[in-house]
Image (cartoon, rainbow, N blue to C red; front, side, top):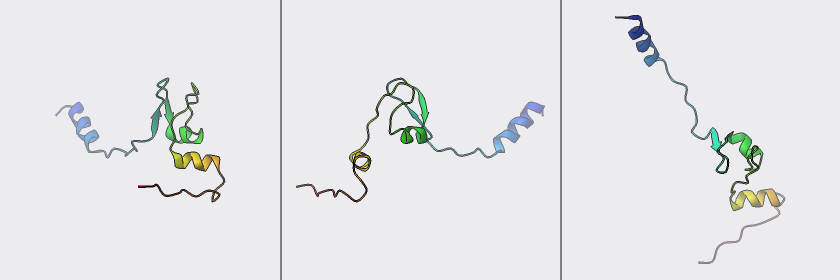
Length: 77
């Protein structure tokens, strides 16, 4: 057995570190890869090109109003 086969066998048995799938966010405008934490801290704005990403209504209400100062009304059916 050559040394390269021994190294391959050892490397195959080493446990790989698990990473989350949502560690990075790709800007749809410029293609820059940004840490998701940085993207969220910057309120969904790309630090490179200033592209404003979409946010949902709950997040927008949380940014616009004080906590506990609004109430979501039920939808009509």
